[in-house]
Amino acid sequence: MVKFCPRCGGPMMPYKKGKTVYLRCIRCGYMVKADKKTLKTYQIRYQVEEDKRVHTSKATEARRLALTPEEREILKEYYEIFLETFQEETESPSE
Ligand SMILES: [Zn+2]
Image (cartoon, rainbow, N blue to C red):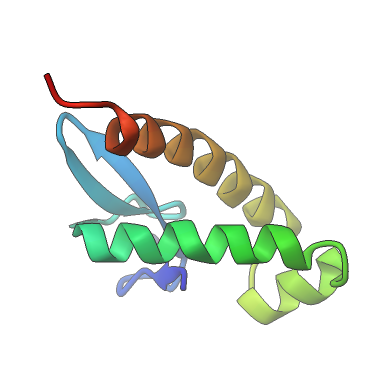
């Protein structure tokens, strides 16, 4: 489930800084450190929503998450960029 900012109520997205991953508010930039469990939740959530997109209209999704269409687009981009790097790291073999 997407976490919401304690300051402004905006959606918080994974944000990588060095080797540490944070959740950062897309509205005000508030950051908290994210643990692996939280990141997994984001990953699973995203995959579920991708599947559901076939059956669910975008308007309904946006209303349920209380996000503007613009914010939905930002979230989508964040997810895609983040999941790419996240998967690369978790799947790469250790030397
Ligand atoms: Zn915020």
